[in-house]
Image (tube, rainbow, N blue to C red):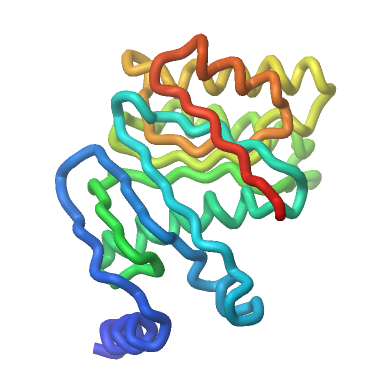
Length: 203
């Protein structure tokens, strides 16, 4: 009761909307917001964004833009809205149609495990390998700058290979948001079916 009451109060106070949760493969969010970040910035400063992913023509979204543009915030808000909708909460958006996902995977931020002899790069690769092995075409995958823990050409090669694998319907086909500073990856829109490019602009 306490949890449900809390969700109701937050929804009422922060103008959340009732999401349409269904068995489709579509993730369609209009005016999505990050539930935490929007409370940390001054009123009117948080910029709402739309999101559309499905398992056909828009499986993988390659997201580019400068540092501090909000790429990570945008991707995390999509994961949070999806999770909130599936636990029965209203969501921070003006409209949300959420096809149920079986798992949400994220590879965000740098971390290491020096006590186990694992570098930042090794931890990243192990997490990415786990995502590629466990994700399905019903999963939602959030990848933030894969391959940055090594040299530029090696990192680009890894990021390119991961994007190719995850976009393949036969191998994976998960709905994916993939933020990168490797602008070469934008070429994938013309090479792979289901890959779209999006760039976050700063005004």
